[in-house]
Amino acid sequence: MITIYHNSRCKKSREGLKTLEASGEEFEVREYLKEPLTENELSSLLKKLNFAPIELIRTEEKIWKEEYRDRDLKDEELVRVMVENPKLIQRPIVEKANSAVVGRPAENIEKLLN
Image 1 (cartoon, rainbow, N blue to C red):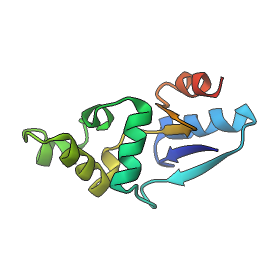
Image 2: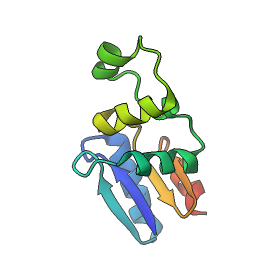
Image 3: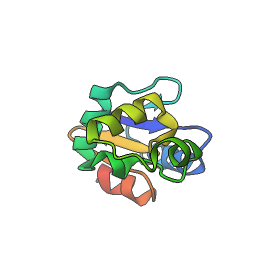
Image 4: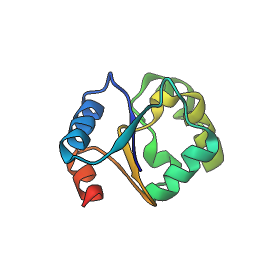
């Protein structure tokens, strides 16, 4: 099953959703701001993305700049920060089997589907 971790208020996330709809593939939408990820789910996604936690963080967000940017946080702490502040997670993320991509640009999603 394909899952898109989606934020309907984000233009790039809406573009990713359109890419999936156009693909004809079956998928499910998880609005991660309404249904936050657990630490285990996020850690699993990071492995599938092959990302260090800092690579998934939206470092231009106000909350990051004000509360976390100048702190020396370990990977586990960064995961916890994203779970507690899901707005900090890059979006959209599309997961398929043992792989995942950040759908910025949307072409990344197309590569995952092929």
